[in-house]
Length: 435
Ligand SMILES: Cc1cc2nc3c(=O)[nH]c(=O)nc-3n(C[C@H](O)[C@H](O)[C@H](O)COP(=O)(O)OP(=O)(O)OC[C@H]3O[C@@H](n4cnc5c(N)ncnc54)[C@H](O)[C@@H]3O)c2cc1C
Image (cartoon, rainbow, N blue to C red; front, side, top):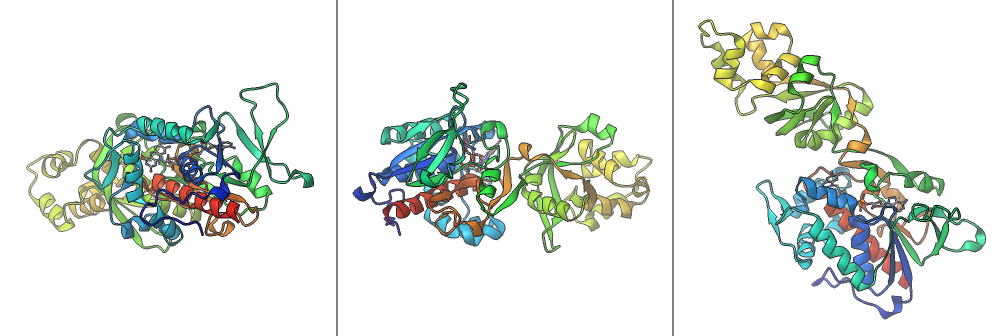
């Protein structure tokens, strides 16, 4: 095992015996960059390749909506956000988890703060200063960056030994032959399958499948869903947020999972933090049978009894719309959604209306395309790698980041696990080249 100094986790012990070894990293997202940091500190020759003209494009886009680095909840709770992969990720997140994420940012001169939701952000909420300082530090330490270098597979001829193939076609179009790159150990940190324009296009799946690596298909995670709105709702309310509602769906065992939050009505359906938080369950239910009905509570802070009392008071000739508005604040998009999803008959019977306000059925037709999702689920399976994230089928080749088969909601969990797996794979690579 690599000697991780327990008091200085960010600094695996330098070993002069590894200095002549060359490791290559493919993918300059957070997982690949974190691995580069660990590997260069261990004294290895580190070459990082990325298909794009610059690294960390997805890391940068996160800064647009307020970069959420990690979460401040206790580690035991934090681990549960990775669903059935919690136990598998636990040792990696214990080695490099939320606390180390904050130390890492501080080490780059960026202080962090905990927001009201417990999420952790850089003080300025931005990604660019962090990425700039990080890449500068890595270059200074000796990491060699090769951009516009697309990894396309391996030279499998018997005499080739360990040689990865890269296409530099974007810079030198006249070059038709792939470039051979030899290595002692290789890391694939190629990302998931969303936002392909930022580099993570999932094309690696066919190369790894051909090499016999077990991969579960990439699927959208933290994604929006399609709903067949009427023209009235679409034209009048697309873009409107619904705040303080509860959305209930069922988990894999059919147990109800209810969450409070907010989401947005879009032209094609629903999006937003509450939808993302429930997206795993909705997506998995859709695979079993589509469409899927989820239930909204439009007045989560009022009991059904209270609602019934309020609606039972004499309305003195007022319309039901104005009663809902004046007594319950159900107006605008909230009222429109009630009209859209409840039958007309409900509006003539207070008791029935109460049931629909508390449990409004919403039919979800399908997920939005994977390319629009914040992240993807699926990828290289847990069984395809050893505990140091080396592929069983390809000794010397490791995997890290979102291309591994885990998923998590938004809240900084995606970056944290990408960093943690990058860190763990790098430790594995050091052990591997030493042995
Ligand atoms: C809009 C948006 C906002 C987000 N905000 C947050 C947030 O606030 N907090 C959070 O925790 N997460 C957030 N995420 C998710 C987070 O960005 C990803 O989970 C994370 O970047 C995954 O890191 P990675 O290193 O595994 O892969 P990536 O960051 O996707 O990097 C993969 C790299 O591999 C390169 N690559 C792919 N194929 C090849 C190839 N064949 N050859 C060479 N290079 C290749 C790509 O060019 C890319 O640079 C957000 C995502 C999006 C889309």
